[in-house]
Length: 212
Image (cartoon, rainbow, N blue to C red; front, top):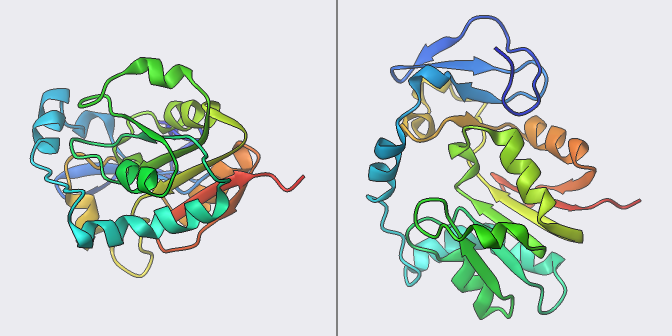
């Protein structure tokens, strides 16, 4: 078994938690669910349909501002972007449009306009989505490929808590969460795609143009 992100070997046999089996990568630090324990596409969609994200919910907006505010600070006025994996209730895209950043919405289940994936953007956002990736190498390659030369990728996902046993981590209990990242994983991604990494908040990663 090789890591679905960096292709390095996993660290020994899988470990069990939350009625699933997990592999840990020795190369980039990613923890991922064994493919045999993933939910089906039908089960995945049914779970997402339980989400009720509301653009008018001030608490949800505060949560998303952890990415939106530092991202906006890194963008030129009028920058155009894509919210990749926006889910059934797009909110970050609404917030960015309110700030003057036109933002399209793509989701393979709810907004499956694949023509959007053939375009170039000043920024791409991926909030509470990267943990759902079955093939993270392909997904990150796609997102970086949609960026213009000075584009910015913003990712928000809860990262592995080294101070808390994985077995008791609530975030890993979600059956649709199959990839779990560490800060070192984000550093690996930045190096792989020749980007400068900034982590302005816990669980938030901005991949900025290289300083070179």
